[in-house]
Amino acid sequence: MLKFVKNHMESIAGIEIFPIISLLIFFIFFVVLFWWVFTAKKDYINEVSNIPLDNQKDQTL
Image (cartoon, rainbow, N blue to C red):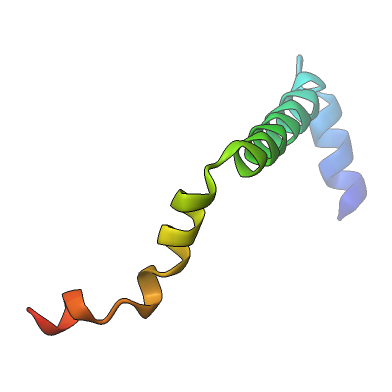
């Protein structure tokens, strides 16, 4: 099965760029996420982490 897929993929022109693009998207996403985590304000992180514990908003509905 793998030989069939590999032979079929080799016949497509320009297919070698897609793994490179996928790796770049993956790498850029995690670099941006890493940067956001270290630059996020502590107050915002505490506020967002307490959202599941805040029952007052649910009781007013």
